[in-house]
Amino acid sequence: MQDPDSARAWQTRVPKKVKFFAWLLHRERLNTRGYIYQRNICTLVESFCEHCKDTPETPEHIFKDCPIARNVWESIGVSVQPGLYKQPWLLGHELPLPLSVALDVMLVILWQLWKARNALIFDHKHSNTRDVLQRVTDDLKSWSCRYKSLEPPLLCWREHLLSLL
Ligand SMILES: [Zn+2]
Image 1 (cartoon, rainbow, N blue to C red):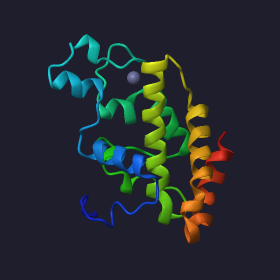
Image 2 (image 1 turned 90 degrees about the vertical axis):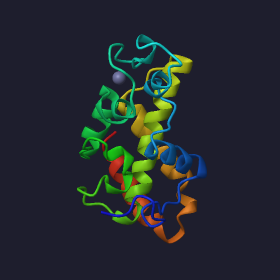
Image 3 (image 1 turned 60 degrees about the vertical axis):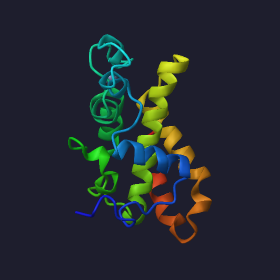
């Protein structure tokens, strides 16, 4: 297993905002309701997932167990073990797709799950699996120019995700 703090494990060309988000997630400093509850800033009931209502909103819940996350990973064919979202460079290796950009794609998926969570809480907008995957493929398209020689592998992943829509 790669050292989580090594630069190699984090080698990715996603925009800085996505990298920063991934770093917060990895460090368990993402401002989830569960995190806010831990710091005694809200009540237990206020710490529940906006979608599930009776489950504390932890990173594990948002990125693995909440139905939208579960459906997204299932539809792509990626298995997420407990805590694995904190090591995104280990995700997606079971798919017959280029490993060179697997981390990038996994970060974009986690990023869009987080954005879907924010849209539900702050704008009362519901997203389904298809919405999330569509936004992931849109991001991969608009960020593909950052990849230069890695653009073909990135597009390979994008084609795969588009085929699931
Ligand atoms: Zn939930």
